[in-house]
Length: 249
Image (cartoon, rainbow, N blue to C red; front, side, top):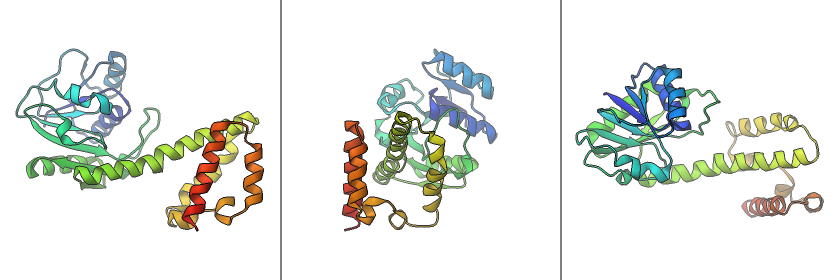
């Protein structure tokens, strides 16, 4: 398929990289941010444009959720296959008389972080079995972990990902605020973070829980609350401990 990737953000960057690393030709990368498009173009030798969308067989829309519908209206080729990469939007968000699909990689993407694409789960959905098979085969060139998924299932995959990734990373950021406030090197905590994540490769998360809340150690909980001077940190600390307590009651 003659392929165009639309977007210049983290997901578009990594999909362009994954495609080119696996000898899947990308004929154009298209978007609004010419500076970022040029960087991707130069790194992966892909033609780019911020003005003219090339004719293609397959358009892969990798933009923010709020922009997917508007961007999809730019595609006028009626016999094209068009997929977006969102985990939280239905195929029907795509507005055009073309074949619609979803091509969802379950991962957190940052341009500066290398990834092993073969381990990333991809979830595929399409309006017909022929396109579903085509996209399944395409994703299988990149990843060892490809499945089909309808929108109802994908919504819950995305929700779980927010808990497992976005919320956890936010707690890392809040933890660093505390360590910075006391001139503690955050690198002290990296082995602890690594072990916490490593444990759930071998244990159910519920079985791996440690800390004062699961032990019911009210003395330590009170000590910590007295140390916290930031109102937002205190709310998070109390909310998380209450949630832990309820899970193990």
